[in-house]
Amino acid sequence: MIGMDTGLELTDVSSHKEADVRFEAELCHGTIETPPEIEFRLTNTGFPRQFFFGAKPPFTAVLSEEGTLTLIPEGDGTYVGPVDPDGPERPAEFIPDSPNEGCWRALGTPLKVSIGKAIPLDRDETISVRYTVLVSADHDVACPPNGSHQVTSRFSIGTVQENVHEATATLHVG
Image (cartoon, rainbow, N blue to C red):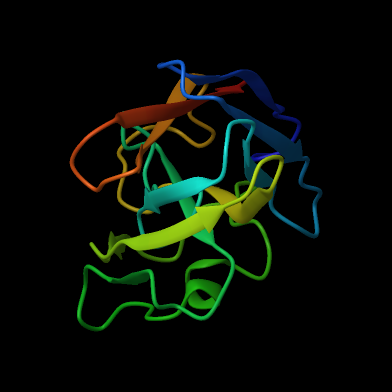
């Protein structure tokens, strides 16, 4: 639930290029007391190798491609910061304590910190990250934003600039 009586559904998860990886996502539905969360997992199904990710491996994104949904990562805040200097600074500060007018809306707009991480993964080793899913704070659409919303992250295998792959998840609100 992202808004009162409004469902959130994970309709598609894919990695667009064959890479000997398994990319998965699992949606944890929200309630009147907690906003929804999504967990992204990447498993190396090939030989042991080095992977290069953004700041929150294996999936680094803060806004849906349309800008209507905000993803706030679990953790210590080394990944996001405020767009507004007087706004929230840590991930937990972007997440409201309760829905506002029946909607889980972010308390600010996060700024993604552009750092990367290199992580070696053995065969069948999995890494994961969990995000809270909120309606964007500064979007001019009604809450909830009905329709499909895509989030995309890039990663590379072997070297930073070569062998780049995309992982995509589509969330449907309504």
